[in-house]
Length: 394
Image 1: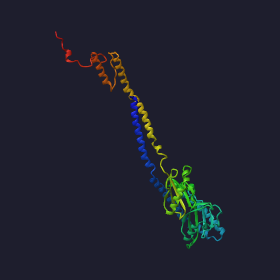
Image 2: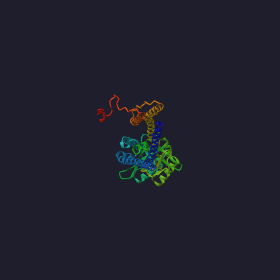
Image 3: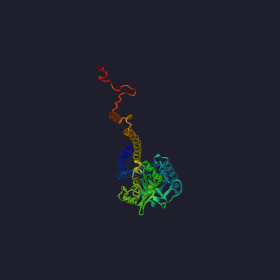
Image 4: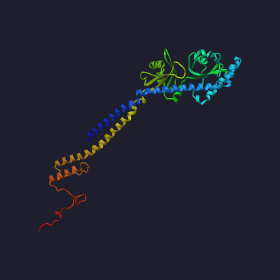
């Protein structure tokens, strides 16, 4: 009896737990690993990061345009001798660098290059040192020559391994009193891991990689993943992502890698706001919001195991509650069969009490013993009938 109760109820608990696990796993999987939604998240991350970088460039351009119109700046280009012009340019470059570092809108992106160039794109002086004086910067970066010709401010990506430079550069043209272009001011902020981390924190919080497309594939310039996302950062330059980067450059839009790579989804978008370049942003999100569905659903199995323990304990108690009086009845009936005719059952039981009373009544009828109608204290347990008060006939 006891084992049957436990087995039946345990089977029910196991069936309910397994069905709950399977149904919840199916529903949760659609939520935590919806490929379409995860790709949309990658696209939102790319757009937000691109917008942030473009905003950084625009702010720096507007800030430069205000500062290049100062009397001190015009004075640099008005000096007669090259030596005096270089020294004044050095002082002005240092002033602009300090002003940019102290401006709250440029927090997290301190300039690593501030240079003044003439109308031919030749460096007059840069901040902090005498290096780069006389360098033909416009020859190394033709976009600067185009800005000097057009007379308009702009921004571009400068990545030159020979010059050991990887910068996001903004520049503003300096005009003379008669409106002629006399030079330009160039400010470059480094493309490094800290810049990508800052951009990620200001936007989506996802892994961002700044990379450059080449014939050899995809070259990572900086990433904001750190140690936590090191594996994803390494996968950001894999073959499928490189193919997506070329497709993004060609379409001038967002392209996604065909499938997840090491558990991550990747998307690529050309860098906007810095002219036409081969630079791209790569964003990555986990293909699933959780490491595994089982990590979310283990409480279901734990509750099922707890249910089995409770079924075993309850089955043991319930089995004893039923089997113990039945066993007493069986032993008592066997004793009566063996000749113990005066044996009567004294079993108090909510469910079997009525059966015990009827068995005792049956035994009394079979043996001719009148039924005891008194209570525990010997008092009648039922009201006397009218016949009990009739006097005996003479």
